Image (cartoon, rainbow, N blue to C red; front, side, top):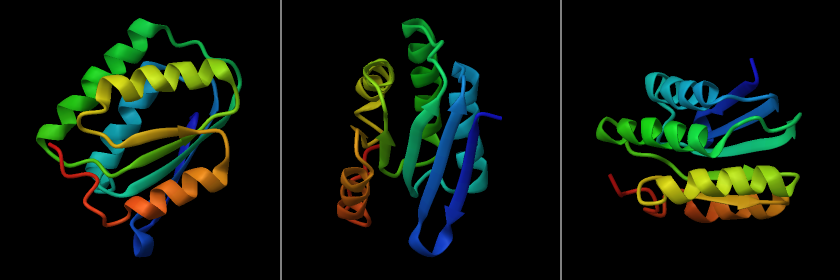
Length: 131
C-alpha cells in the first residue's frame, strides 16, 4: 500500500507517508479511511518525497478532488501540509489543492520545517471551519 499513516491523538496530528506509485483511488481511499477512523479534522503532515514517479493524469487528480470534497458533508477537514521533492509532484498537488481550497486548508512545501511550522500555526486556530 503506497499510503501509510501514524496517528498522534494527543496532538490531533497525522503523519502520512506516500511511496511508490499512487492512483486516484489511493487518494480517495486515504481520505475515506481518515473519515471512518475519525482523523479527518486532525492536522496532517503528508510526505510525498518517496513517490517513485507520478502516473496520475490531471483528470484523475480532478476525480480524486471531487470525490474527496463529497466528504465535507459529513466532516470538517483539518489542515494538510504536503511535502514534495520535485516540480512534477508539486504541480499535481497544486491542482488538487486548487480544486479543494474552499474546504480543505492545504499547502505545499519543499522543506519539512516550513510544513511543520505552518501546521503548528493552524492547530486550533479555526483555519478549518469551512464546510
